[in-house]
Amino acid sequence: MSSKNIFMAVNTCGGILVLGGYALGLTYYPEYSEALWGGVEGTLRNIFTISMLPAAGGYLTFCYVSVFKNGAEAINKNSIIGPHSVSILSAMFLASAAVWMPTLIAYIHTDQNYWWALSVTSLWVTALSILALTIVTSIASIPGISRASKYASVVGLVYITFHCLVIDAIVWVSMFQ
Image (cartoon, rainbow, N blue to C red):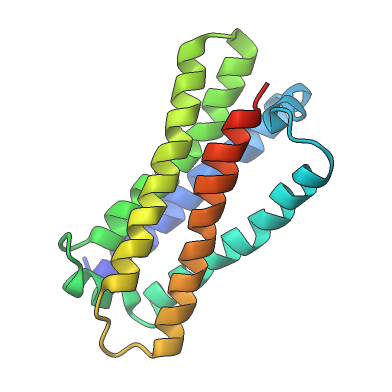
């Protein structure tokens, strides 16, 4: 299977897991919707919410270049960490992102600290895997892809990395009540 097809499969399955987990969590536990914000209120909540849009757009831009501009193939050929690095890092990113809401709901529901530890760990794995993907993409030589496409991918990844690392793993965790 080609790098592009593996990448597409990882992102299709991972995207379904992330969005499906959020949908199920909010559907079956609507009483926890406020608690999931963890003390983030007012203007800061608006900033968090608005930031989710360019973060998602940034990752989707990277996915577009990876699939339609053959970025996954090019990055994997020139990656410092080996073949399929794009798919492996994307799988880590999406799998850990899919774990966050279910483990947080379990923590809110049971008040067992290990669920909190898993939830916070999932945020950090999410942030660090997307950071690694950003680094791999930015330093890889990607022949056959325009500078604009590579730049758009890297900028998109930088923003989602900022969102996952700073807003989610640092600010949200520190504010959780």
